[in-house]
Length: 327
Image 1 (cartoon, rainbow, N blue to C red):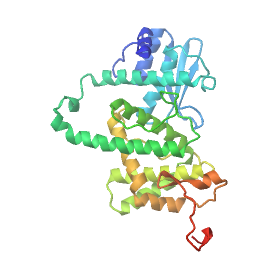
Image 2: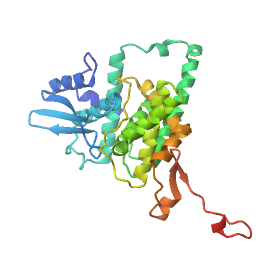
Image 3: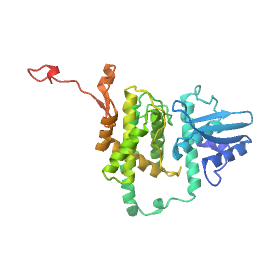
Image 4: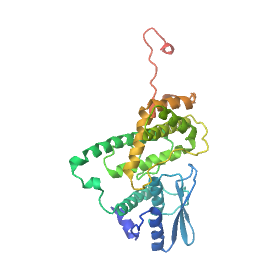
């Protein structure tokens, strides 16, 4: 692979202990003889999740402090890829070709794989077991992957005007998740979309949904899934109806601290997707928080979002002897 060869030719040092992206950036800066540091700060959703600031003798990566651990690692490595591949451009990525952005995102995927392999050190125990013993986990992963893809499709359809950075410049299409790399890629793009929704996410909606779920005696994981799903569903509808964004203090947060545990993060998002599409508690919160707003044009009249999924309204068909308005 040419991109992997270019990364090797860039003389990127191997990830040092304790195998964090911050420690790796320090090592890369020492190898390049240019200080490279990562700083966490709150960035608005209108800005990129990561900013590369170049100075005379040092480089700094500013990363959104609200990102989950997995998305934070990917964002930092995306900016590192710009450095080691010799990409030019300003901090806001305004003058960078989309092809260059896709190349940096793919390089970030490769760098993240290298960091994960260094952190694990050995093959995971679940891969070393025999196939029959892995069957229950395999089926659980398949169910989780389908729900994760369902969430990806919902966010893509609900945010058609948002350009999410991917590893390709082609029009994104839903593809069945069949590998760990596809799972990782889908998780990252879901987090990108959720970050765009952050200004419309409301802590009151989250608290109301969590209270409703606890009244129905759901377990803590299910309570969190219902609360997050309701928050996302209401945010999608508020954005769709052009309601003004709120303060941007999103209650959504990942409880998976390990930036290398893609499976755990995929399972968490899958639980959210299941509640988003199937839970009557989420539907009740939507009915409570989202006002009925008349669409402004015919296109928005025909395309609505119901239950977290885009639904195209069908034209009314008149019965024999009755007018269309009476149907």
